[in-house]
Amino acid sequence: MGCSACSTISTPSSFLSPHPNPTPKIHLTRRSLLFLSSAIPTTTLLLSSSATPPPSPPPLQPTITDRVFMDFSICPTYFLNRTLGDELSQCAATEPIGRLVLGLYGNLVPLTVSNFKAMCTGSSGSTYKGTLVQKIFPGQFFVAGRQGRRDGEVKPPSELVRNTDTVNSRAFVLGHSRPGIVSLCLSENDDDDEIKLDPNYRNVEFLITTGPGPCPELDNKNIVFGTVLEGMDVVTAIASIPTYRPAERIRQYNDLAQFLGDERAKTARAIWNKPLETLYISDCGELKVAKPALSPTLP
Image (cartoon, rainbow, N blue to C red; front, side, top):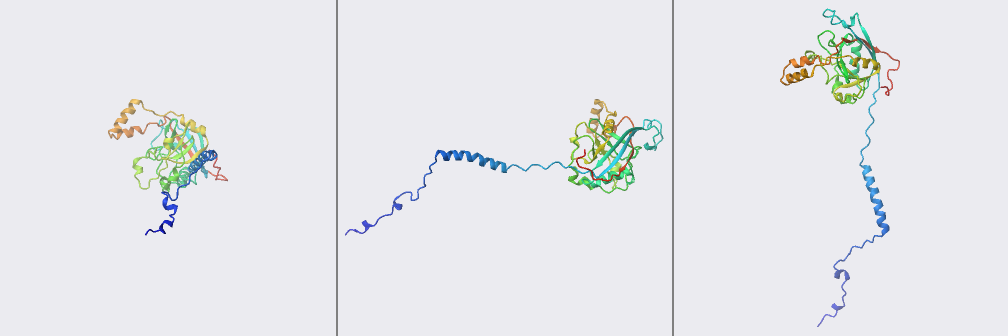
């Protein structure tokens, strides 16, 4: 007996089709293709613009909070007609070069500025007055304020605070980008080694760039704390003073001696770039102004 009922049961078409839910076909017209080709570059541009880093902040413009002056002179008879211990400030045949007015960045490096002012006024237990300009590097900078035991060198100050600006990264943000930059010597410091070993040692040696170009080799190694406001002609005059420059053969012998560890090499190098005239700071002090916070747009 056959099952006639079974022949009447209809089988759903979904069971018979090998693909019950076929993916609908996408019909792209010419207009659609044109739209996609114009949209893709725009999307790429938006993504690339969003990944662009923000612009760098503008360079720091420090404010001048204090002003000091320094008078420079030459004493042509200092090493010819004197006795040991004579002060340069008492030179009878002084030849004035001129005055520098320095603006100081007291808000940026307060301890460096405070110590420098104290050295200019003499309230530190020592002073720059009557001390030598130690070295002049032609086309770069000159150095003054070296501490030592010899005549014409700065006596160790006893009333200065410890300068913690030297371990503050913010103190090194300014560069030696032009002539007239005033900077505390760190990498260029050549104070007497015996004085440096004193636990109360305070570094007060400074340099002033003379130009004509920048001195990037000094950046991040020395602390810029001021600028020359008046007297760039004096800076130029100082830079033009002849210095002792050894012959090339002497330099080569010295380099070899230094490589071999000969201590005499360092002693010999101490006189390199020294001015051949007795250039010194004949006077210095602080200038009081009615409005000490000067415009940061000053040079």
